[in-house]
Picture 1 (cartoon, rainbow, N blue to C red):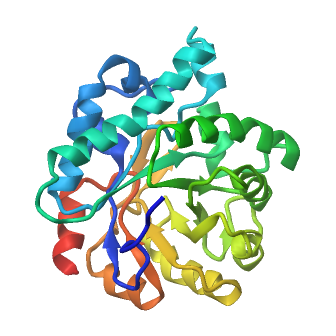
Picture 2 (cartoon, rainbow, N blue to C red):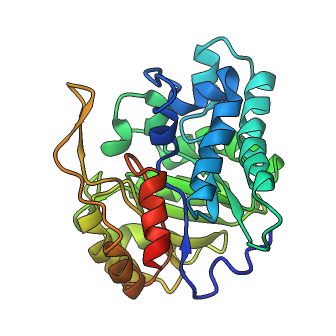
Length: 296
């Protein structure tokens, strides 16, 4: 796939939290989360992508973060239909891109590949350490990666990875699929959510030719700069940063708590630290992405 212009040294703004935007229209209190709308309301996914494009985002990440064969099977959706829904996630992002085409601006579709813990819908992606082997995790990830690749995205956004063990499995699954990927960790301070030092975690992907860029996402904005510095110690790959709003998720209350600290003022610091793709994750909406675009 052609990535010319994406990692050429100039910073590019990605989208924000797709589910955050969808939650303004729908209740996503479901184990499938935003992936449920691939089945129930695909037009709303197109509208959410379009809102981020209109705000200045040049990358749309698909509504496949929490989509998995096991998750769909639990809802009575067979494998053929699940594959079609994974394909649809890419097609909907591409449809939104087509709607804003014609202005001479290059835009990309990144197929979201969330961690194993996301499919469990119990917050495991914020802990990692699932007790599964690298081989077991690779075998779980590979079929849906292959399905997403079949739909023809520009790249894969392998994101919110909490554990270097899972990163090793994902790097193995990416080998030979023929589409470049970025791999971003969910971090806390200078460690993964599973507790590994970030320099060790980034080293997992440092020599992988399939991984075009590395970075962090869905972490606190204040953790981005230090995490990028850790990445730069072990790799010269392009860097990616799209943190959440800075609010904390209370698993018991099922609600966000604390103040939002996401600010367009961060963007200069992140770019200075090497970020070539900047954006947002949970609780970061189109207005925040518009502010990032203006800050550039």
